[in-house]
Amino acid sequence: MRYAEEAAAGSAPESCELGQLAQFWYVGLLIKARDLETSRRVFEAAEAGRRTSGSERMTAVSHNIRGSLLFAMGNVNEAMTEIDTGLRLAEQRGDRSLRAPSYVVLALGALRRADMRACRHFVEKLADEALLGYFGQAPGAWVTAQAAEARCGVESAASLIAGIVRNPVVLRQLLASEPAAAAWLTRVSLKLGADDLANSTVAAVCAMAAEQPEFSVLRGSAEHASGLLDRDPGKVRAAAEMHPDRWCAASAREDLVCLVAERGPDRGEAIRVLESVLGTYTAVGATRDAARVVNKLREHGVRRGAIRTVESEATRPHGLTNTEFAVAELVSQGHTNCEVGRQLFISRHTVAFHLKKVFQKLNITSRVELAAAWKVLS
Image 1 (cartoon, rainbow, N blue to C red):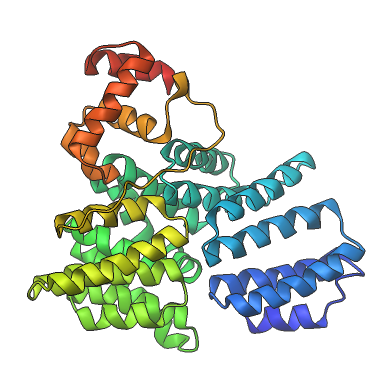
Image 2: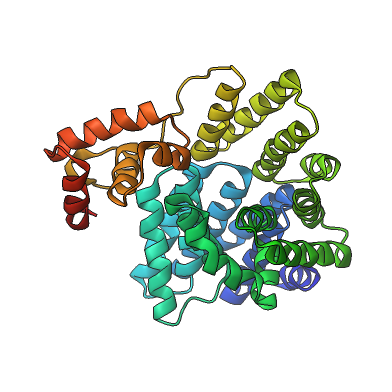
């Protein structure tokens, strides 16, 4: 951060491309640190210089950085539009450098919007980059693991999770760049019964927070992950209060409800916190997470309206919606309605309703026919 700030301050962005890159590099690091106000100011200054003498490459980078900033601020839809625009511009001139980071944000955005088909598309793009030798980002492995867990359950992501955590370099890169990663890795490792992986994740993020105490994003990540490992509501509450990332703070509050319930249920407080979490998830476009919280509120006797998924412009077979596509994909893999409901955070009755629509649109009558047809359609 110090070197990037000095490079950005000492550059003349209107005179050369390297000067512009230095400023955008600094903005990118500020975004990872979730210093969003400084990010915005430096980005605006970089944009003013770029407009006076901006190449197509810098225009593409600008869209990518602006998209990353919007994503960190919780404007998922706008962020994905900016990222996609930058990616298209870069690809038109044969520049591959933006592909992997763009696919990571687009996959994460699709996952949060519950658009599982788009998420799978971008994860496959990341896999292509790996095969071609251009994939070297720890976040790519992480988003791939998240997509696998979302589609088929945590067991399907076990090998990827182990690969990330057991590689110290990859783990450190990930924890430094993705504030949600430490808590997610700890949570899924505990679900897998892999206490060694959970311990390694917490040890790594706590060490990083101790090395760099000035970054609240690292302290929040460390408190959240260690709170999950120790089943300590106090640590998770502290994480929710200090975390500069709105989505991460909401995630910590959601986990806090579960930990407090273990020590004695307080229905009124749980409902209050969950409704606050639902408001944040909705505000930042996290449709999938909002649907999960609606289910938790329902368990407490509070009913909220159904969460509408974002329908992208991509063409789907036979006009299937996002939810219908996700239901069809999971059912074709042999999952029961209850299992599908748990993964998509909807009731088994809602699964049955969507499955009926799938059968009608595909002109089939059974799950066996769906499994056979899906190999061709997907």
